[in-house]
Image (cartoon, rainbow, N blue to C red; front, side):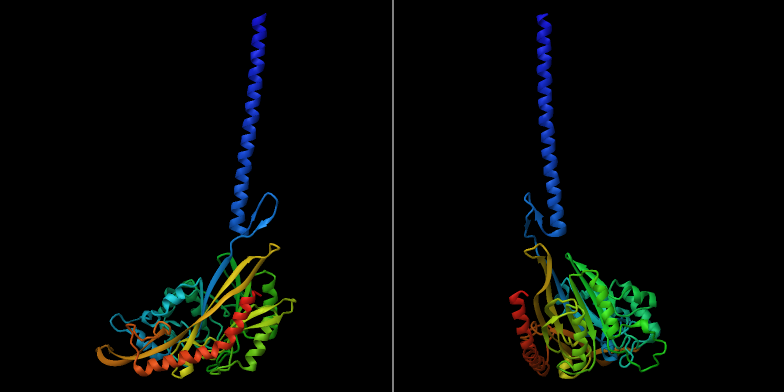
Length: 434
């Protein structure tokens, strides 16, 4: 009987020990599960929102998201430039030397944007210059190798090779994986692609593009209204209202507007920029005058009761061309950074955090080459885009003549004076962090 009692007591003791071990194991598993859940929440907080929520529910400051841009003006091709890029040994076009000096500056930006002021009509369409611009597809491939991501097509030369050239240009850009905006092949595409989305480094940008006109050197009867975005007030209002619903971090407009060869903005440009800013654009980038106009920040209260400073580059000039006038041979590459981070209330805010530029100069040089079927010696012009800061001492392998070097440095001094006032305004705004 005593043995049975002892056995019962031992059994009860074992049951209590097992129950205690089970409770301890359960608590350990719950603790491990809590740690795993906290780790998951923390991981998703870092990946998604940029903030980590602690036990007390307080938001701690997360990382800052940044996105860098390089923007240039008109990319043009004349017959003289095409002859200089043609290699008779392979009977092909080689544009590498034209952009080799500028490639590091473009490639280092997260997003690079340029205005394609020519078309890709193919061999049947013909490679010609003014007034009907057409360039070989090799130009597009080289621009891709240089580092361009977005090419603006809404400009006055997009219809130079008529509807067939317009459609083929967009097809080539699609094939080469460029983003493009402002020109459409069909009414359906026009309605579904009023803007493009640039999404990188956790920042979402809406980009729209418009032109003031399309050249009418030949009949425009075959050019439909849906082919090109024109700067019409009702369209601008409708597009920017639609964009606002998507809650982008920044809304950017690229504007191709006359008049040409004016160093300061014309009232026509000012009125159109006013339309864009009034309906919520955060930034306006301009082209077509073929010369650089000032860069500044304008404090505007838009139709949605948002008051802030907005970046405006009235005209970025020619990125590359064969124009010979002093002001059109020089230009700039515009660089700016966007910064996105949370404010004290935990809301995301995006602002322009840095603005700079690099003066550039289109260098022309006459060289002797064997050309034609008989490979006779002929002199042809070659073109290359030079970053002036790199060639300030003229000590690079590409040597400039004394006259050309002096002209380039004279333009460098001019552009610094020309942009000085606007950049001071921008710097004051950036320092105030508005």
